[in-house]
Length: 312
Image (cartoon, rainbow, N blue to C red; front, top):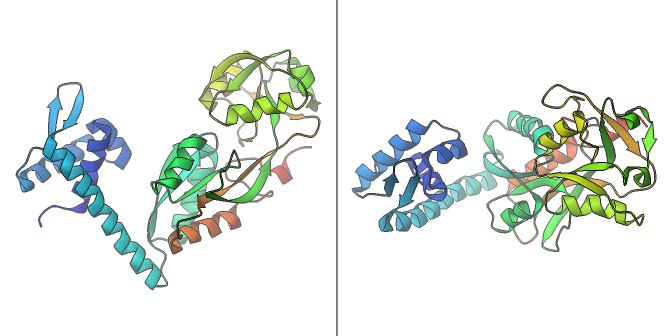
């Protein structure tokens, strides 16, 4: 056998994305490296794996589709070798697929992953960032081993271990009249334009805060990207509600945002780690969950102002 597992990995990425560019982004390597690996694999196997469409990506040939399924199975078997070796030794090593909610990932995931791989040098973290439904489905399909997420509609087949509660708050541009308040109520906010986080389950959570008080928010804008929302708020298009508390008080354009406490008793979001109940967790996955439990608490949350240290 004169092809490598790495070549198979690049072939799978290209086959699943239909694009050399997207495949290169997925495996964090240059586009020429992906193209070269695929060409070498085609030469070694003496088959054409893809039809190249000028400026329109790739499509698998019939034999390419067959070999894609076989290659994925072969890589899964190779990963199993690492898992078996890890289980039989004292070393924690191997690759872990870690899911993370879109709104949490920029703050929590990089520092958490770096601290883990520094503590266990034989490990690597492959991040999967998406909204809640996709993350839960990833756990069910074993595409994700463990996830860092919120307690948003956690189903019976998912095990969720809470780490820290993050209360909701209002966010304003620094020149907004309410930005100088120590707290603000939902009744007062309900008349103002809301720059709304339009993500599955997250949107339901924020609307439920209003519904619990018999109110309806005045949604002025809807976005699925937290950074867009933050910049819109900083520029005075309205306010938003959030649970995350970034250490930086600036939006991406440099304008300042101000966090104001919500008055009243509102359900917080609980940040925690999730895994599939029916799947026996590897020592690698268990080590990561233990690391998360020791790393995240009310006194410290990576990338955020922790609840215990936030102004009351």
